[in-house]
Length: 390
Image 1 (cartoon, rainbow, N blue to C red):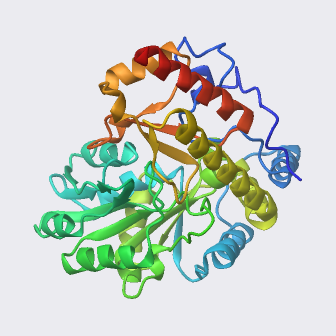
Image 2 (cartoon, helix red, strand yellow; image 1 turned 45 degrees about the vertical axis):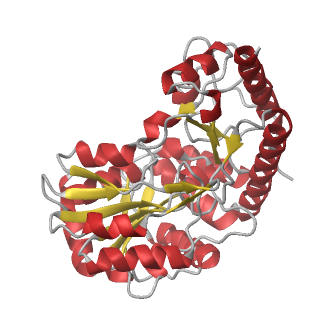
């Protein structure tokens, strides 16, 4: 019904992924499989909503009005069984912006903030860039699957100066969709030790068959101890519109967050983001369902290809997101050598080492692209591996 096969030419549009790609990649005939935006056109209803907004002719300051809020609340209830209509909601220019606001609001310089690497690099940046102490609770990689280390988490969150945990749910880059039991156990540890949970749920709509996303705030007893970050950006390929919705059920925490957000002037909704969000949340559900089927098909192709032609490489079985996490350590290369090999073969990937502890030797692949491009990328990967095994 929708076109997920036709390649889109994004050159000279200011795209970070395309126009700032390494020189060997430009003109190579394959898009980088790096930054997490999609190589698909947005849903027609979103494009129509933006065109209609553009035709008005005035693009002034805009806020999350009733139409916007109703669209967001309806989506959360319909897709996530989460009634947000009476919760405090803030809009920020991206989830990373919200991370910084939350760190500055709920912790003091020198306080500890927990992350669970290997994880999205801006988590560490939001901590260290604000003069807070990075506390790592590394995930355990066991039998091809990642798990939380709850014993270590309990130890790391006991000190009085550890004030916050930044949770990635679903997890980027390892693709875990945390179960309700896992999230409950994490939440109980944090609550007992006086640690606020900031749950980045930006990939919450990109869930693979057989799995179900659990909103952290819906867990028994956790609503008062969390900040939930959501956005249309990953779901609907709208990252360039810079708009996220942040929910804080606890009124006291919300008031504190509001003070910082107001001081930093983050209360507006970008004009076109308002139109796109309303269009997405009220009319793009069928498009999303088809997108998820396309992503699932791409993952199956990846798994089958590696199993057949490159069995020494191991793709972690993703449960959510459109990001594949591939273990290439059996090649015996350092992170820098692996990166050089990929670039030599005209493959631009996100190197595992940028995701922190235990990421070295892995590569993150963005699979939100037409399958023909994935086929070409895997051919180049095989060529690269063959070149060092001859």
